[in-house]
Length: 230
Length: 242
Image (cartoon, rainbow over all chains, first blue to last red; front, side):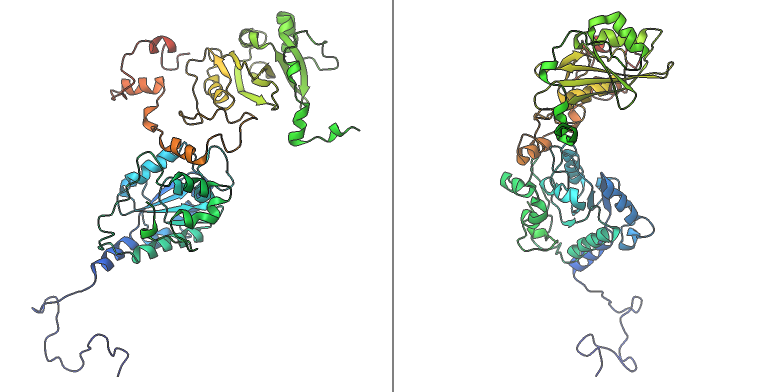
């Protein structure tokens, strides 16, 4: 009896047959699921595309700097080019004039890609419930994780990124639903319907309705890929 | 003490100018008790009735209200007269007092040789927001006038490139800093989002940017054919020669 009982067979005693080894002449295998390998690689080499427009960007820079050191999580390189990025971090308020720029950058990122809405303004417009501000970037691009705060502390952003990693780990890239999936947004228009936009952009709308807007009914910050709109 | 003394913030706006004051042309009595300002006295002497009012705010800021029809002439004189030489336009902006009252255009001048400040104001009724551009006196007024046009809707006659500068080029909700402008804009959020995403950000360049691109041999967008007549005369020589 041992701790390993029921798991892999353990050879004890003198070897009756040669063990498989790289140069032993015997066949050797490392078996795993393709999903697991792909997810492992994607999880640990996320390259963020920083879209910093305001004070949240300062916290994002602090997160990337030595004290909090985003590189620990595989984000060695802030990618200032959307073509070489997997994770859009929208940090700060976005004006309507900036909205097509954000959309263009998101469209330039290759699949698979994820988005973090960092801070109150990016997530809901924050205190800027005015004529010029986008009331939540989920009216512009699909968002995976909303990080609350004004601005969030680096720990908050790191927690959001860990949730993205959790989401990647739980995804099934080789499944029929995910394989080759592309988020094609309607050209020059929001993916949401007008009533949905009105709903989430009402005063205090996004702070209470964020999950409904993203298609998730229950509370909880994470939105699964299958729940993401469109 | 009357209640008016306690008016603060938005309530205090009631003490602003009223429409009835807009058309006043008679010269007010010479400012008694005000410390003299050489340029204001000289303006009075030269332009007479065009100087409507002279007052002192915030301790030592001289404000002179002038006739909007003669603003270009007076500012040009203030800039070029050797005794005054207000060669630095510090700021150009507007003030809207709300409640349908007149809108003020403000030119904040500074004379570098004389080390002297002067604030010139002109009041415009809301149904005739037009005043001469000072673009050809101070190039600094280029973007300032565009901003005043964008935010308040004041049309500066003679500005060579008067278009929006802060709001998107396809913005159609009016002029946001006017007091009668609703805080969240005039359109629904859905419509605002639709218009925002319909912007073609690469399609809008200024004449100058287009000319630089042309000089570098880059292809121009469709509506701007190279060597188009009309643009040459508008700018005079290019390259910031003014």
